[in-house]
Length: 234
Image (cartoon, rainbow, N blue to C red; front, side, top):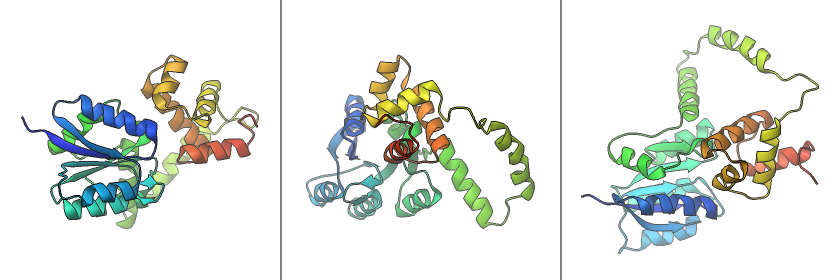
């Protein structure tokens, strides 16, 4: 049986351990190493004794971008297949990752409970990509080709107006407020799910919704904006 060696590069220790455990539990995968920075990843990749089949990498690392790691990995290990898992969901980061060599792009808000299965699907020929990411990329492509119909924008207006909250209504639902408070305290998705007695998928849905309401793309941005708006206790 073919066993694929996986390097995990993620600065959030909880997420890193979560991914590493998922990989380690899979008989078809072998955890080569799990590190939390660009420097650590480069040092591991530079060691000629190490071999690599899959790179699971975050983009927002404390000492640089995961794009550096992707380029370095694919240069030293041409057969390596990079999979990005990041809170960055904008088109520029997605396209830059693909250009650097990434074969998949998963947004952390929709990260699967079993990342090992996603890795195996990629090794089988799939290109895993979160639906919300795919829509953004396709929309950008359509605009660049000059094919975004004006009617599409007009059709979206009623839905946007209908979903706009009442001026006096609270910005976040009670459950979203609870999840936000737990995020601010540093709890992981799995820990929040346990505390709230819901699934990790439900927690991810709440986080996705509150990100949209706060117009943010990361935990840090959500906590900052919520604090600014007085949604978190001082």
